[in-house]
Image (tube, rainbow, N blue to C red; front, top):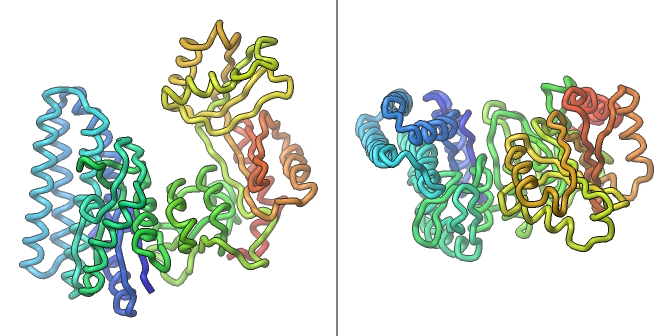
Length: 471
């Protein structure tokens, strides 16, 4: 088999964990598999780099010095304890020191300007993965495996120049990946590649969004025609609900690509929402597994599911920290072509992502759900561009949550919506807004944030997701 294996930050934030990861990789390689590895930044490193960028804007040189000292100490400490061979240990330390010197130089230059562009921010953010990936490569070599570490740029991931949320240019990326990775595999070398980062056509480093190591893994998988993608994390797989909310939540054995995408978009953790895009056309299965529970086979995400896996409802997910905006135009909106387009265009132009939309049949109002961190920008945009012109009134409820019921088995089944709303009504939960796509793959609704957990538990009980033996 040809397997692309991605490891998250929690799997590599100590020497013992890095050695454990290296042994997982080694066991698959010794099973005569082609193995390509994708590595995230150590846990917390991306957040620290993001916080550091704010300190740079303030010209805070003391915080920069402290950050560099702590980062040097933590990464060199892992190398000291994880790499036994003295020659390899020194090589690993030198590679890490050179990267940290590069980071120090770039931070020292930018701090004088007290300004960070999206382009320079991507450059800074890339260092998390660029520091962790060589360490895993050297530990593999210490275990007697041939390995070579590469950045996403070096491996061949070409993206557009939308810094922070870059998208891969797949046709060129596939050619470049094959050109770089195939010779390594033929030479029995394990490619160890940074997640999260690529490069645009001008050679500038780009990042593909938070949690982008999953995305990088599937991009690479599609490019080299892998047999499977394994996303290793600290959970056993996709769950029927958040176990912090529902005690009897269970691991889902199998889900379709469509179901998994809905679950990711509607708040299910441990998978980048766009991660499945590159493998859907190629139908490469994705498996989510627990780095620390090797006995569990995890969740398989694939194109076609056996009948026994096509349950009515698979998962209840929730998105917290959201806000509901109700835009009213009175009679002026009724029957007026392009009114919704003007609203959405203004928000899109200011990079406000709308998560859910609902419009009354009278066409006199449109309701939208956005994340709380986009709320101020959304309201300001509407006030400046549309209020008093297209829009007469804007009201906000900033204390709501979105609950989504996901399952391909809902298609064509009568009474599912009735069961959903009866279940939450029995728990005295009021539904504020409803949205369902024509695919009938998910049914989403908005409730007060304080009612969110009660609604999730009610639906998990209603569809008996803890008892149907999905795990």
